[in-house]
Image (cartoon, rainbow, N blue to C red; front, side):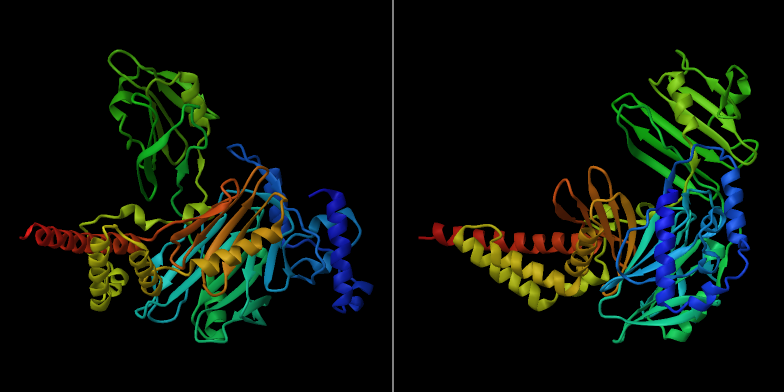
Length: 515
């Protein structure tokens, strides 16, 4: 953020503070003592990262809506020191949504811990473990299939949080002494609680079908975990075009295989099993490699030979062994690939799932799909299949409409409402380069929007983190991503229809052949 932009933000916040009757505080401002969070943030700026880091700066959008300052208001003044000290989350209120923005510099700092609720109501069990990153998501479920979701964004990343609260009753509550917003459901359904904690550089939101007092109790029991095993990934590959053909991951270790054409293949892996633990320990014992450096880390390069068809690079830090093998790749490119390794930090895209990729026609039907195949519905399929056979047309519109209505009633997520809400946010964001995570209120889905120079993209996930729709402005249309239940339902109904259609056609042919 430039000094000019920060000056404008400061003036805007001061004017809003006056409107909120902060006049007496401004007449006698307290000492501008820097908070522990600010001191910690300054230390981060002085540290040099072990890997290249991209720095991006959050841009505060001008708006006529009321701005509520969640932190840092007491030290605002027209001085460089006070302006530098103003860092924290700011809430902007619009007609039917709130936007939470981080006003400090965006810095992708490595995190080895996560925040999680140390207390949840009885009966809730962990369904999805949180992983360190800029966007963190934990999911709990009770015996009645009710969900409890805790998500948060770190202030070091320049992504805003949007809460669309159309239909909600917004109340102000307190979490650990910090102001918080409770988006209460007037009906019997989930509520959303949002709060920011400056000392943790994070904005949290909790979604659950719990009474307000229990929502606050869960929020006040959010704690930081012990350090978790690190996960690593590549951020650069030789420019030949690759796809991931295989991968596995366990605590402290993992491996991923990239394939290009028939001969090019790259394997990257890591392990915290010191001193051994790589597939190339035998090669390392030969001592025939060339001493190299991967960044500042010592390593050994074993060039390809008639006896060894791939180039292998081994290196290590204090805690992990790393390996990289490549076929038909120059040694210089192998080193460049290795130097691109960073600690994996989850963003929204990393948390998305697609169970439909696991579709197997022979697998048992899931509950939703099985429940949708009622006796009445299957009987209607057979009637329509017979009518289509008589008309000599396969899968006419009445069958397709019947199936679509049944799937919408029993299986499909509420895509239409979610797409409408996300489309509204896309239109409001304009063309300024920015990223945002959305928490939707009824349906209680999540989404992200990325506005870039050339295109705007969006992804919508249901309450389980299952991706159900995607958008790319270059295609100018939404793409529907089916769920596993939808895939099973479509396949099963196709088979039911096909069997009935064939039986009807055989019967008609038999009648035609009869004298």
